[in-house]
Image 1: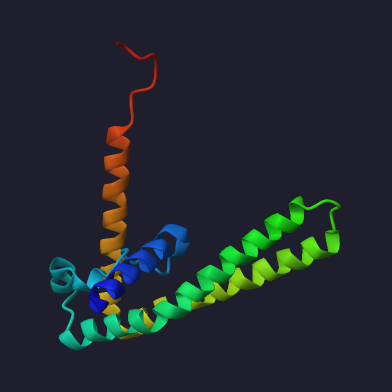
Image 2: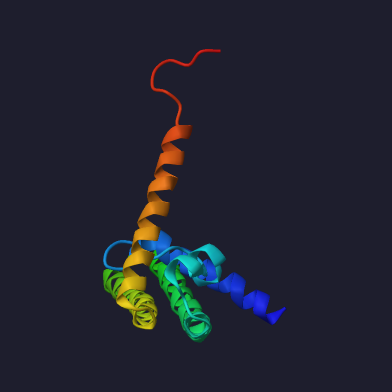
Length: 157
């Protein structure tokens, strides 16, 4: 049960990393626990030691990432409340905005450190192949989305 919980959290966090912009160069990586997907692991030639290390990195960083994201959300709420309060106290709003920026910076630093640790775990060849796989997957998603879009123009019953 505990392993499943960590897996779910890992998928959510790494998926959110991807969704929030850290998927671009130089950190093109697939979302989720990609090292546990047999096809990806085989394609990259991951060793059991590398898989274990990647799992360990995720487990170690999970609580810090969760806390950092929660700090961002709390700072967002605080800023919103202060900005809507009457009478407006510009000084307090500025302070809340600065606190939000600090929280976001800490979250981005944690994301960066996690991705850097992943990079250090892989060989140069594995890293390049992983980035290529991520780009291929992104392109496949784009193509699927574009294929689902309705044709421009009037709708026909």
